[in-house]
Length: 457
Ligand SMILES: Nc1ncnc2c1ncn2[C@@H]1O[C@H](COP(=O)(O)OP(=O)(O)OP(=O)(O)O)[C@@H](O)[C@H]1O
View: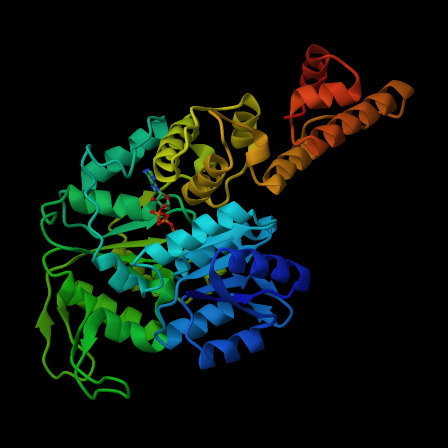
């Protein structure tokens, strides 16, 4: 039986989840704080962690950090409120399998648990995990699409331009925009494509171990170095080394990295010999590495060395019609994976999608679409299959920004009242317009006119 550690401080919610999972043959150990969760991890073996993000005595990341530092490869899922999506997206960088937004949909939870347990790569340190992945990015690959917008064409142009060279590339972009996809594309189109593409997520490397991970070590060079270990630089020999979240590397490792790039030699920790390496480095960041926001910890000389060419990956909200292409692509994938048959999205869903900000970019879109497909029995996906708070966040924005209700006269007051009433009813019926019209005692056409007039959705 699969053993799950559930850490959630809302006792009612915890009991609901516990009972539901038990009904589906999971063994659940429920803990209510970081401290008791830590104790539980120390004393038991779990197959999966299901962690609330915000807890009374800290956040779920602390438990993740502990498991990572102990080298425990336990897949983890983070549960968060919708307003924490950005954080949750960050959690993915910490090796979390997935995040799920509250209120948790039980079917969705089961789907994610199943995925986490079936995916053999889950929970492993990023470098090892990525090394074994070799997605081919040929046109027959169903895993990625390029997009057709101007901005997508420009991105592709840059990829094609730099791929055949041996330049070091810095890829910048918000989290989840597809930076790794860009790095893989460059590798696939380069003359190194028949050699390894090794991806290291520097955000998941502990300060102590990052030098050894990159450059290797010899047996006995520090406590815990029980055998010689080849670093990822050597593993990537002849190929490409992708350093994701490079801004997380400590100062000492930055110095070593600069040397490796300049002199093309590395020195494993504790070794007295240097090793020649032939590796192309592609780095990625969602920070302004030299800016004040990043704390000024990044070496300027290294920055210039890795930034022989910079590629900016656009956020989803700036990709225009590509949003539609990506959505349709992810719908198709989710249909295949979940055995559904969603053929289209309702107009309202498209309106929400285009008005939404997508802070988690393609990764978030992929998750939202998968959830939507899972919750859609028929062929048209409706707004009710979207996270409620996502729809609300649009409502609030449109509420604040787009309609002027500032007038003091009776007409303006009445209109403001009518507008709010329509929004409230729409929310109540989960944006089903026929039902809303019924409740408001107006016909559908009048409702559409009013939605238009008041710029609702
Ligand atoms: N061109 C694409 N076509 C289809 N899916 C894509 C594409 N680019 C990215 N994705 C999907 O979006 C998700 C995020 O992509 P990726 O990990 O490359 O983003 P990232 O910018 O490297 O994220 P982070 O900043 O968190 O490291 C992945 O699930 C990936 O499969």
